[in-house]
Amino acid sequence: MTDRSTQRAEQSPRALRRADGPGARLLRLGPAFVAAIAYVDPGNIATNTTAGSRYGFGLLWVVLLAVAAAGPVQYLSAKLGAVTGKSMALVLSTRLSRPSRTLYWLQAEGVAVATDLAEVVGASIALHLLLGIPMWCGAIVTAVAGGALMVLRDRVGERSFQIVMVLGLAVIGAGFVLGVLLGPAPAGLDIRPQLHDQQMVLLATGIVGATVMPHAIYLHSALTTSQLGGIRRRLRDNRLDVTLAMLLAGTINVSMLVLGATALRGHHDEDFGALAHALGDRVGDGARVGFIVALLVSGVTSTAVGIRSGEVVMAGLLRRRVPMLVRRVVVVTPAVVLLALQIPAVDLLVWSQVALALGLPLALIPLVLLTSSASLMGDNVNRRALTIACWIITISVVALDLALLVIPLISD
Image (tube, rainbow, N blue to C red; front, side, top):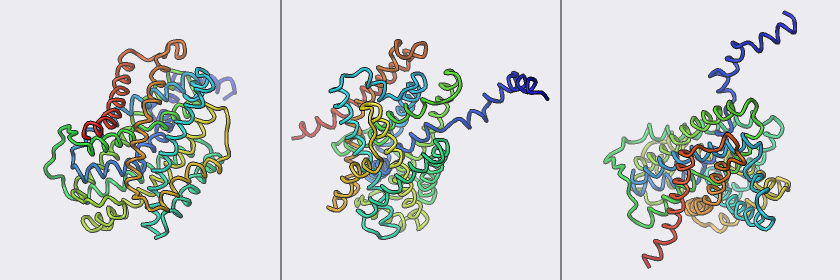
């Protein structure tokens, strides 16, 4: 066959259908699965298992709503990057004054520190349980491992990095699903929405912050800027990508809470070491090892995603980059110090997720405004129903944050 006839064959309707068929579309998936790592990090493990062990299935509704809310939010982020070819941070930098950009960057970096705190603490606990090394040493090992994953991404490419993240999600999910399958069957299932005390509000806020994470919003918009193909195909692929990633992340989050509500119900010592020991006693060594391995993989993979998010935010808002080693030292130092001071690890994780929830409106509000702007998005501006849904999500997050701040004042 000649070159001309080959070219005609490649452009034939059958060839075009193959390029846009289900198999080809699946091969183009990936960015949402990288962002989804943020939805199963050690902060999620801490908040979900704690919620289950304390309140049974009483906060399952929060987990389900948080995952349901994360889908449209992540799609808007992917859509912004695909349509504009710019990350959300870069788009904001063109619309904010220099002082405003600096202030916005400072709060985003604060979110990054809170994010990395949870990720590093979780992985360091897992290393301590597996190898017996001090947790502050484990924090350093985790930071190095996360940096190594980023070096790997630079050498083997973004696509290979995405595959590693998908494998990480599979391992994390397997660890918790194994615990649920080996554990006792649910008893006294009560899934009615309830929020009857300050501690439940605190945990609910932590669950939302751990699930709809600000840095995942910033990152996802950057991951879709270089996708190939026409804009319609890219948006269609992103919808499928987000749907599948959120289904997987949602299943894992529900498994975390179910594990807490069944195998760990009534276990009041919420230290991860005590939780792992309780799983071994109540369910078996298989569940205990699965839990520890899932915690380790969760911490290492999510800290790599956190590094990437921090780079995107700084490059977009400040138009600057810092060496990865410097960023690692600055962000990981608080975790090392707090662990060296023997601050309870689970408390650190829960409060770090609350900090993320408080910073979430500052990511959600610009995202909805930008994707609702016809001058920026053109024909791909949000439809009214999607805009209304995302404003409802944003208002709900703000209301939950206000409840967290107001309830202590009322109770006093």
